[in-house]
Length: 243
Image 1 (cartoon, helix red, strand yellow):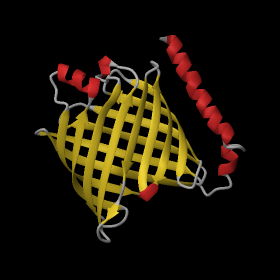
Image 2: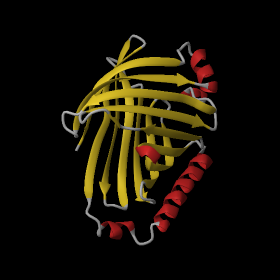
Image 3: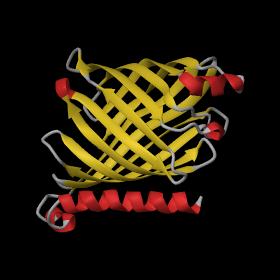
C-alpha cells in the first residue's frame, strides 16, 4: 500500500514538474505580466426528483490568474434531501494555456463520498472544442494506484436573446475494478442532460430540465448485486450564476 502511495506521489510530482518546465519562465513571474482576475461559476445548483426521491446537487468551478497561468477549483456532488451526502468531490488544479482554446491542467482531486475516500492525481484538458462545445477531459490516478478517466461536454444553444438550451454528456471509465466503491473495469456510466435556462441577466439564470444516468458493464453488475437500479431519470430545476 505504501509503495503504491509513493508511486502515485512521484507520478503526480513528475507530471506537475513537466508541465511547470514546459511553461518556460517561472509561472509566478509570468503571471506578474498578466492582469490577475478571478471568476466563479455555479453551473448547476439544482433540485432533483429522481425515482420518486428528492435530492440537491451542485456543479461549480472557480479560477484565479492571468491569460496563461491559473489556479482552478472544481467541485460537484449530490445529497438526498434529509440524508447524508451521496457524492462529493473537490479538485485543485494548476492550469496553463497550451492552445488558443485549451488549457492543460494538473493537480489533485479528493473524493469525500462515496466511501472509502480517495485522493487522485489529475491530468486533463479543459476548453472549447469545435462548434463551441465546452470540453473537460481528465485522467485520474488514485493513492491506491487505481486509474480512471472522465470525458464531459456541453454546449449552449441560444434560442432567443434570453432562452438558452444546454445539452450535456458525461462518460466515466475505469481501468481496474474497485468493488468497495461499486466501480467495475471498463466504461462505468453515462450521463445525459438537457436544461433550458432563462437569463434574467447573463450572470443569473433559473432553469428547468431533465437528466438521465445509466451504469454499464461490471459497474452495472455490482449495482444490481446491491439491489439498486442501474439507471435513473430525473426532472430538475435550479439556478446557474457567475461572477
